[in-house]
Length: 438
Ligand code: PLP
Image (cartoon, rainbow, N blue to C red; front, side, top):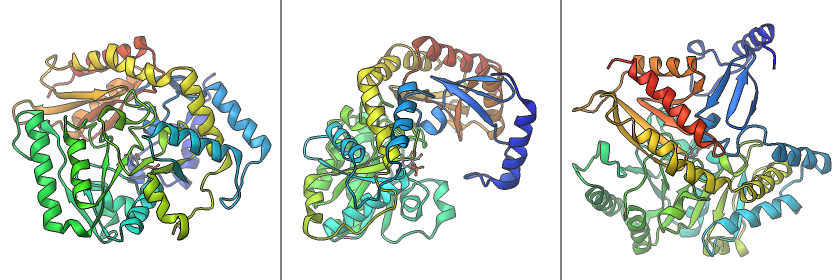
């Protein structure tokens, strides 16, 4: 599309005057007005085109403007756009069947929400109602959403603005070898010591008071932390020992991001509740939800489920989920993401280690990778904000849109990115890093 500078200016002015943007000091930002996108690329009204290594907020798994997905939404809009939860509706029923079919056996029901935060709110409410207990354990270095309960579960600085939050939430440290809280030197040690720390936390809190432990299967915005061998099965065993429900938050990690339908597929662990959003329909329409273990669901067979939303299972959203999952299956999108992780994105990212002292650690799987930048290799002091700004500017100048969080470059392109573009994106980052001095 031809550049339209007047439009660019007008959108910026209107946005500045009227739109309150998430998590930002409003005067410190100048959001780029987007004009369009296709596949793994988007472009703005100034005529700049970017290779997207962010997938917006790590949700456009199927890529921009997938014609079949857009058509399915248009078709649903032409049928019956909105149906209250108290009615049954075809695409809602089909989406629930499809999503539960991707989960482990014995998780047959889905409660739909508008996004990930509401999914975690409702998972927490289910766990409390099912167990009759009120406490919940969540980890530091986690993000679970911006609403009252979800932000209290969150284990990073974004929680502070929402405090004091809801009662009953206790935080513990999860495994992260590069920045180990446990002085571990191997993944096995890290896993074992993190499990012991969790056991001690449970014992100190009174395991009989604890309704649930919630974890991101692979931690997303806090650093793409892939759990070490044995950790998730160990958490499951602790939950079983004390009658605690395990909630796995798959909002960011689910639906292809890790090269599997659910990230939990990699780790041989069966949770009691799975929360999802983002990739379920690649964010084309807001949608999230909870996949529910049959025993938990049975709690609400005779007694009412104490929760609801006007748009629980919105017809446009669920129609888009049915279409997205069908397309992903037919086009092998999840297998493709796994392949890109193994053959282009993963090896290229890993090869950055040692190219400059700036690169402290590289980790990930599928199309879910991170490069952690440090000011000092030995002490692992995180790279400064100024350094990260320079890295971001360098990538944008070269037509690659990275996702920068704290001292990390998250490499999280759409699952449909080609091997060639995945390698090219990392090559751009390598070129930028070569010109940045610690
Ligand atoms: N859980 C995780 C792991 C997330 O990454 C996010 C969003 O980034 C959420 C929950 C919240 O989802 P939403 O922003 O759709 O409410």
